[in-house]
Image (cartoon, rainbow, N blue to C red; front, side, top):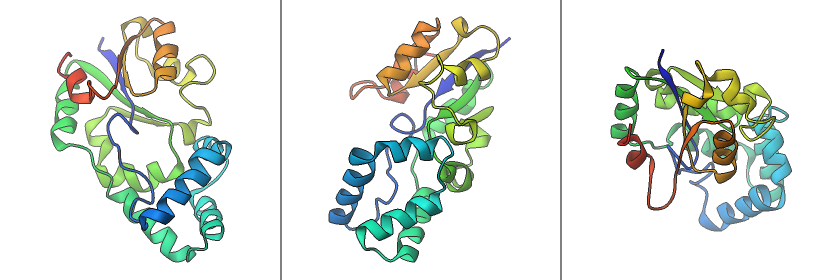
Length: 192
């Protein structure tokens, strides 16, 4: 039986941000409003409470930006997220030895725009998104990991940039490779 290899998306595979094509001053205001002052909205969005349409409408009103322009930029930025082709090919090659699972705390736009644009299902045996599961990776004692592991979680591996998520996975008995400024995903993949 293959070991399960869980790999995170944001901050692990990809560092690109939503709405990055906005002018920098507006982008900064958006980041502060949504990701600093209203993290509860972001968490609810990642758990399936809100749609991308709702969030974009909210932001266009808050920031006084044309809603159509906001939406078009959002979709375009999602579709143009960048992951190293070499990294994806390395993950694809690991499928001979591992059951590869991309597991992400993400939004509906991940399945709608990002996953198809990057053809992620070609590189992973499974793609798990918190939006569909209504559950974050750090919730319910690592429920998502326990649900999607093949075999014993003590034989599973996680590559993630979140210390909190890594600690939970480690407490379940799995092996953790924590993404840091000095050790990116390629460093950790080369260990496998």
